[in-house]
Length: 139
Image (cartoon, rainbow, N blue to C red; front, side, top):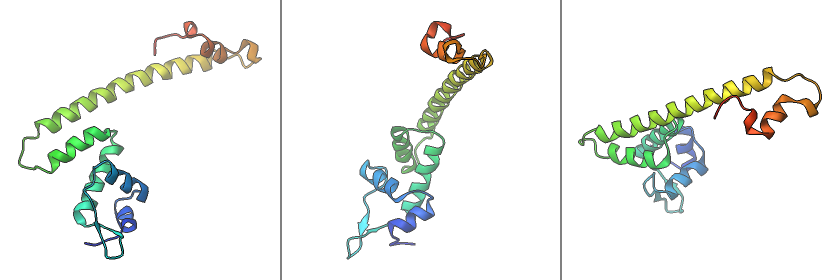
């Protein structure tokens, strides 16, 4: 696998070439080597790192959180308490978003159920969206 091209790395890590270039640009992936022809070359560590980034993104971690987690990953003998703090903070954010989404769902459901399917001039959905005071809750 050493010396693989960016396209092969993209396939192995199930990501796009543009995404790999972006991660290089912002410093999440270490600078790449170049072949004699000037093409990017990657090794197994690059594939592992890219998979780590992709998985963290799927779990909703932000770029800066991922940067910190990668730094921790690069130093395996250090305490994992910093990783725990990052994950706990992210969990709190996810739980807050879920709470907000549940409130939004409740409000949307109420709007839809109150819709009389008549004319727009009497449409409950349009009415609620036009004036927040018609909402059943804060969201």
